[in-house]
Amino acid sequence: MGLLGSLFGKKNTAAEDEYTQQLHTLSQNARDFWAAWQDEEARLAALDNREFVEQGNELLKRFCPEVALELEGLADGSDTPSLIFTAHGMSAQFPQVQALVEHAQTARYQVRAFRHGMMAGNADFAIGMEGFSLSAADILVACTPWREVAALDVAFACDIPDHMTDHARNMAMIMLDHVVGEWDASVKIGAVDFVDTAPEGAVPLHALPPLLAEVWQGLGHTAVYPEPEWQYGMYEVEEAEDQDALTLLRNQSATALVGRADMAWCVSVTCRCGNQEELEQAYALQDALWAAAETQQQGIGTLTLTNLSQGRRTAYAATSEPLALLQQAQEWCARFGDLEAEAACEYDPSWQHYRL
Image 1 (cartoon, rainbow, N blue to C red):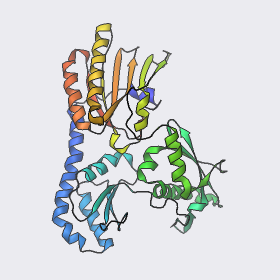
Image 2 (image 1 turned 90 degrees about the vertical axis):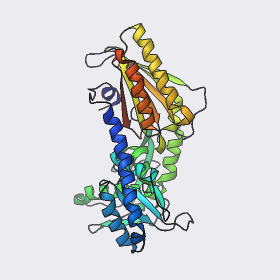
Image 3 (image 1 turned 90 degrees about the horizontal axis):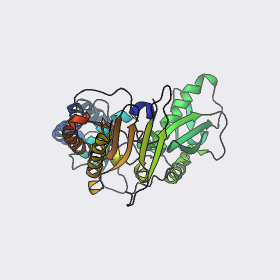
Image 4 (image 1 turned 60 degrees about the vertical axis):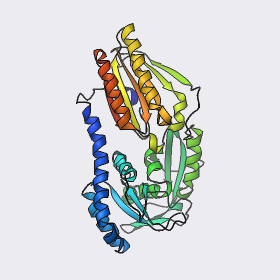
């Protein structure tokens, strides 16, 4: 479902506390794991690497069954090995990965979220699966902007038997994670199309990271918190047979923060705005949400969407503190109960709510 369809589709009418409970569960899962880990860490550290990973994952799956643990040797010149928590590219599990890192309790290991692009620049990178091998040089990739993220056109520089096409494409996607990293592959790349002929400007897969970085920067995603005065854009959608009349106000300056891992949550408030008095109260609700989000640059107001046909208005903010902002938003919604105000919280790492 696209942006306009999803923002004013059928809302979940469950209690607001459901969002809070989901956030608490993520943190509690992580705390419970680390409490158990501290009891087992010395024993695990004495194992060889294979047994360490196997038994470490058995422990982890008791608390976070969709997340995995990996071990890397000495990284970045450090004397400390690294524990890597991965969701195997499943973005729905990224919040649990981040919670595990946030609540880490270990003195023996560095703790990092997501597989990093360890094979970037490695022209010799290759994998084999089920008797079939591919190298990074066998995969040619063109990277272009698409809906404010990146899109890839992928072609093979070697002959792929017809019966191995799907298998080869799956292998290419696995290799993509190892070259650009789990976060970038899931969040910064919005579409991957396999094509028969390599497009102009295509590069071998191992050379993709700097090209992806160039496209990302060209989209204005600098990761630097924007300085005031911020710029805003107004957009309108006319009413049609199957389309409500909409007005959108977007904080264009917020685009700098798209894709930042610490700005992956979206808190929103929706209320009625059927007359001028209600609209003024809706403005006040938005101002409160945005001001709280922007405290100490912990978040930023991103978008408002007014459904003129239904008389409803939603304000959105990206945040690194979803629980605190959600709880404040719920309090304000209670004060504006006459507006049927509702607060919601969603994990939205690629800012789908914001991209038009």
